Image 1 (spheres, rainbow, N blue to C red):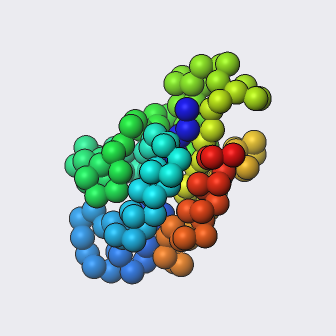
Image 2: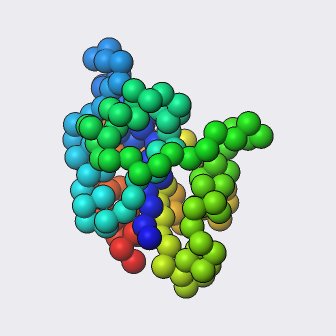
Length: 147
């Protein structure tokens, strides 16, 4: 199983997209790149963005980006996205798949860096100011998930 944990703000939208004043701003090219990642890796997309709290936003993501497989939990004990991702993995991926040498692969696309230390090799940081997801980052994610 391959999973892409996807943030939206700063990944699939950016400073320029926000200036358009849309309710659910999504940059078409960034969305295309997420679709490319999904197509070339056959990964499932788990929404880790704050957008996961809004049913309309989840629907927009599924229509305009890629189908959303699931969303990470909202844990009241933390504000760290890495902990929520860890919790999702623990509850949804069998131990045999996630242990070293197992078949589970994942990548995290986010503009914030609130991940756990051991997630650093799976974390690909984008920039809200610099346009969100880029070709170079998308290629690195594809390479990582397919390794």
